[in-house]
Amino acid sequence: MKTSNANVAGPVNRPTPPPLPQCALVEDNIDYNNGWLSLLENVPDASTCCYECSNYPGCQYWSYMKDPSAGAWYQRCFFKASNSGRVANNGTTAGKANPISGAPARSGKRGIAWFNTNACSDLKLMSKVSWLYNWSPTPDPNIAPCLNELGVEFVPMQWGGGGITPDLNFTIFGASKHLLAFNEPNFFQQSNLTPQEAAKLWPTIEAVAKERGMLISSPAASACGPDLQADCYAASWNPEPWFDQFFANCTGCQVDFLATHIYTCNISQLQEYIGGLKKYNKPIWLTEFACPAAGQPIEFEINFMKQALTFLDGEPAIERYAWFGTRLDVNDGWLGPQVDLLAQTSCALSELGQLYNS
Image (cartoon, rainbow, N blue to C red):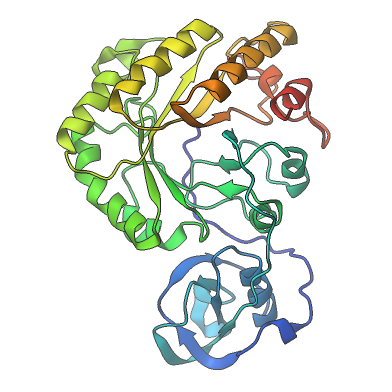
């Protein structure tokens, strides 16, 4: 549902880095031009740049812009997968990181459509969650270091049709193994792509994924509503007409799994919806789901979630799924804060969050 596709920017106040012996092979007035993964802004010195790279999955080398005359590029820290393209540059310091080992990757299907929180303390509560995403190529900067620590996979997304080259390849999170593509393209108020437009853009998505060895989702065409004519492609509640046309126009394309969303409180409707998508013969990721029952007792949500988790965990076609969301606006009149997995005003699981984390 989220429409943001912002680039990553580092916070000004970061943890004090450890002493620099861990950052070997520091080279002054040298830059590494290739192997870009991502960047952080407002990094105070090369030591902090090295420390941040060491905490960033996939980052092996770094370059730091030390020269104030560089303008907006000053104090930017560039994360690199290699030190290839080594060149002399009087405005840059570069070096090799000492990547910090993280926890073993968590297993299981369960994830989070990450929303309205960026604190590691919140993420640590979700011990049964193996992955998350936030509709953008990069995680919130405050949780990026603890993803590795906790063994949680961040899955980047190319939200819409803009900025795929070169921005997508530049900003994708370094350790990601999967790439989500095009959020709700069958919705006029979301990424709003026809199947033909999405198919035309697909070679660029494939090129980025191939370079990084990533698996690719289908565009996340989703169940529509409530005003079909005004809201969705072909005035169809079911996204199958969109998917049918996409696959017809994208023959031979790399699509490793099918991504989709549905909001319902009816377990039979959820089961029938997933059953219809099996015809595409691909693993299914239900990357957004929840029960839109604002104003109903919490028992209503709990009952639906119990049924949904039993179905999704037991359905072989479902490879992963993600509840939406963690902390919603208290004035939200559609989903309502009763779908929250986290308590509104404290670092704690809600009653629903305790069930999702069980």
